[in-house]
Image (tube, rainbow, N blue to C red; front, side):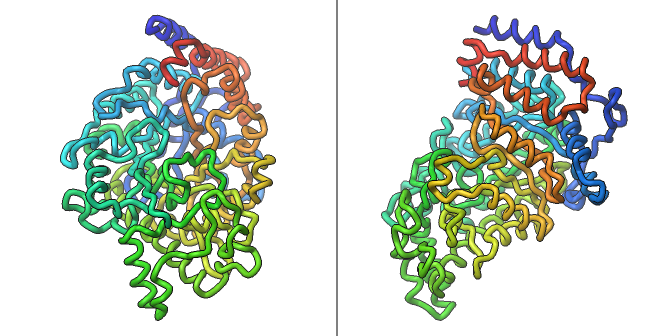
Length: 537
């Protein structure tokens, strides 16, 4: 097995590569940009300059931009960067080492995407892996080893710090000592109206309460972040260019409105409100009393659909005469959404203090709840925590909060196209993306993108990504992360389509001889065999 991988890796290494020019230098036919590094929060609004493929994508975006676009727009286009996500379970569950079954495959995969011309890779770092058994001990060896692989190839590294778990992601959902605390006090976990707990997500209502071994979750998150900066301090000036802060399930700022234990990748129901742990109910009660309506704080809405029901199956979300339009509905939805924004504000405020002196772009993810977007109440968004009174843009308060902290908003749905299933659920991905961009443009928040579906093979999805990242609009993604490396990523059904997608977005920008050699080398590194499938499954 290792012999096969070593042979493949050696062949890739000996092939012609897309050499990264030194700052200020440029290959023939390409525009040179100096490599900008930002020092601290004060300079976060300054654009980051891309290398490799990201530079060429930026040039392509600038080329299609209207000549009347402002200088700032052209500058933003030139800073676009491309990342490829690494396997979610790259590291052993105890954080001590790179997963033994994947180490060689990850190393070869990093080499392959480098040869293809990507600017960097994304590494998801889980709190549950770094602190599996004790609140006083951190285990960084495994993640550090992966970071060193990226550094050795001269790639940038986007690190996603994940606080909450991902059901089905083959990693522990929460640290063992947090799970033990939840066993003693189950109400620190999000709870739906039937009493089912979300074992992967700590309730936002306890952010500042001493429920985790005598300290608050917020202080534990801060300790996790600060330990990361200590363990990787030498890579911030050379390799780590981006830090994405996890704010909720799947890293997104939202309530866990899906059924407990379900996958966000396949769920298209309305979902349910997650306000039934005793801490959330206490806050609701207090807010109702302060608002002069104590009876409104006794519980959540009683007439809402179940997880997989349609909006019109119950009265609350009906388009005509639904309770969501009543004074009570507005009261509840405003409180619920406000709690979500307050949680994001607390965590991002803390993260800005931790990373404020680091030359990184700070970002966080929002959900792309495109199903039922065509309904007037936008129920899937509402139960996830996105709502604003008078039928206004529910993403606007979130974009305003992101902009205040200088944090880039990562939108994980830039590949989504309409299909039959989407039509049956009132989906409107195009309108939702416009809504998010409008909110960001209004408040001055930057955006970045990801694909929602893993390892796509449909040309329509690649076309959708291309149109979103090469847009001539003022709100243009600063970077895009393609999810995610693994056996399917390098399969014959996917890898050729992905490499063709990369070439298509920079058509005419490469020297053809160099492009052919670079692609040949990348294909040699990424060609799937049994070793790839075993290593990166």
